Length: 636
Image (cartoon, rainbow, N blue to C red; front, side, top):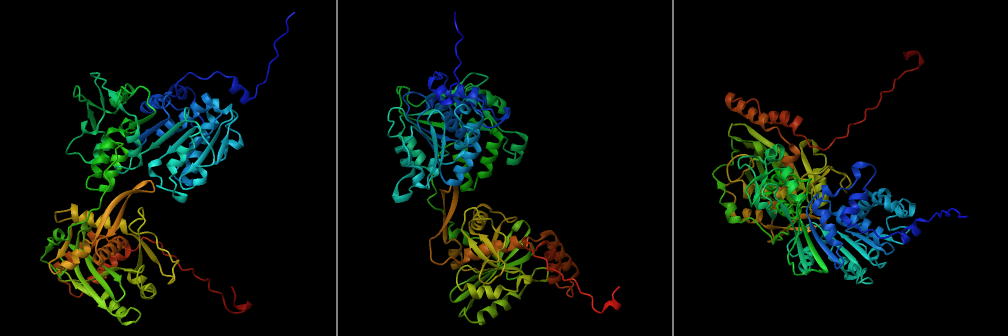
């Protein structure tokens, strides 16, 4: 007599121990199992990221201990090459620790909670390992039932990178990390050292978008045994080749907006010349595969992988071309395009500056009368130890500008005399070609340098005259003019001014706009050489900082007041935001009627008062309810 076999309720960890190892490569395993969230829409599909899927299999080659990937934007590299590969390895080879390292704690929190935790919770094989238990949701370490602990760390904290030995190490955007952390230790090297205990089985996965030429990503790729580049296959002729931007096509007379909106860009196959649209590009990418830079190396230990942004099915050819066209003439945007779409490093800017002698050639015969095309005046004031320096600029349609007048008020800044002279100067009017007299409509005074208290005292109670205190901000992402704050000693409304944004705009106009009209910068013949030397006294370099390309302005000579004055004039016109059409029309009416009894100052107040006020909100005064007086008899 036979008895029925007793059913054993195995624990998840025991199931993992006795289960046979999956023979599926990571791309197929992820295609079957990888879930990045709840629902069908969060299912990872290899067909949606073919270049990433095939790169995952390269990382899984038995000989490979380290892989370095230069990834373009929106290719899904972090999810596929990082978390997808980790999920496959955890199920297949579980029991060893893993480290996911990012640049800082904020990035770690965002990526871990937004992508890694949902993957552990909703990918079925990982659910069996306890990925949905509370302990698995902690940022510092996620313990799974098969013995694997997934640690997270960030480059700015050496302790989070050096606490445990890990067989799998994933370094996300490692080339943007600070070069060193505590005690001069290199964060990337600290991560690599975690895998020293597993010399024959470790997997170190480096992922990053590109940066400056010769940076950490370039250095790591140079150390690789082989470099793998993706070759697409033409759906028309079957030609296999590496896809490059040189073969992109678009109409010469189309604007970037038209190209992107109407999908006008394409890709010409170098084999047959047929121009692909996005659908045919997708077919070519899906049929492609990687080609090694050295086929004789059959068991590479360290591999490099290049995945440009145009291999992503989520990046249209037209968007890539439009971004390229918009980047022309802007070094910062051009660097970003090469890094994010071509997956190429870009020669780091060694510093460029405008040639003062070339800029000085712009001097023209006009002034001090304000030209006809100008309609509004701004003034900037720079406070120095022993003087106040001013420049008045006239503005016209499209922010065409004319330098009108510069002046220096000498004196002891702690006395009232120079400030009284400044107040008199700001009440001055300038003759216009129409015959009208233009007042200074808006003034920005730098309060962030010398004699801050005196500057605060002068600016206070002059808001109604549009005389504003400003303070420069060198933060790379600071807007031209930010919202005002009153958290200063003078309790004035102080406007932060993004000096990088202002200088980019000023130098961009001077260098790129050569014809009179919108954006052109005019200088009068009476501006001396010293003015132009000061205007061109800074050079700009562009570097990777904090995960982005930023412009850094550096002085190359001691005096640079002219460029500072232009910066604050840029802030003044931005705060004023005038209605140029309305002001020009008022000037034309004045010239036609020669109405000397109708001063233009009133016109400016009407036109600029409603539409040129600062963008900052003004608090409304609370009105008190008037209490009734009298006794009970008089109340009604």
